[in-house]
Length: 376
Image 1 (cartoon, rainbow, N blue to C red):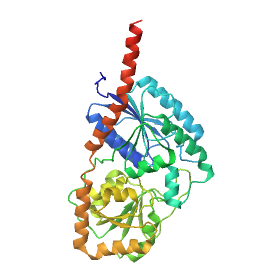
Image 2 (image 1 turned 60 degrees about the horizontal axis):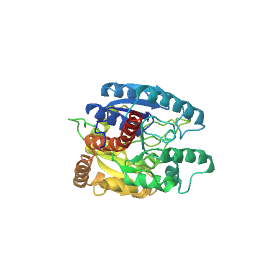
Image 3 (image 1 turned 90 degrees about the vertical axis):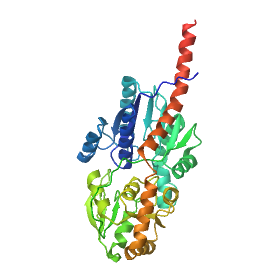
Image 4 (image 1 turned 120 degrees about the vertical axis):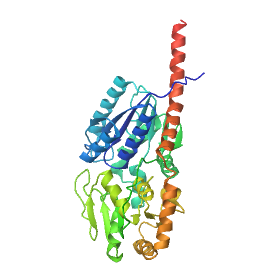
């Protein structure tokens, strides 16, 4: 008979660069509310002050180890040092499950069973952004990612599109699940809707395609506001034109812009889930999105879709919503209704079920080993 004891403690990794941070914080908060202790290990560039405030407000204690992430330039010494640090946390904290939100540490000699969540990948990013396979300088990354994915007990993705990409590039895997992201997000009440087009995303990330929004901005007639970091973690930055660049904002500040804006635009070339889209929809924005598999999967019937590189089509779709208030309001209503399906409770239920499914065989094996030793 399988051990029915509940999951008590999780060691989870994250970084503070993009949406993985938001996902990990919401999941940690939801698990904590269910009586699960989460040790949240933050890798990569140090969290910014607004990240720390978000963690403090959520009651989440951060364990930090700065260094380059696996998708950054020349990261491998930092990746190995971070791996040793994570194994020490595993040894000292004795979690029931390891939850990795990155790939290359999957092949370490963990004490606990490992679930790996694939939120994006350089190989599929390159293919969807550039239209061809990643160049040879990414070969070591691909080998390490494959080793990590094939070593873990379960691979999870936030959409079937993302899982399909991982399986094409690295599969097959031992076990897989699709667990859509949820968002603990409360729209700002009592804010008057304004004639504003809004977009949020890393300006340096070609997958977000923020440059397309900047390019069509002069033709729209409404002001275009862009929130997001213009500085690449490896150095360098891009300066947006024809828009009001708000810079990187806290979650509260972004929520205020969602509440004010009438239209949210993200003509993404690659977006495995899209948490900013979910937030904008919950806030009552009409959506104009890139016509890609993952966004179709979640938002068909609740958004307008435009091929990412069709800038005249992007301008036409936005202008159509600007000129037709009734249609804009209807699309906003549909987006909000769809967004309400992506709850944190649903996400936490999915991950707890996944944790139990990989922890139970380990507990069975350990119990069997204890019985065999006692019988000698």
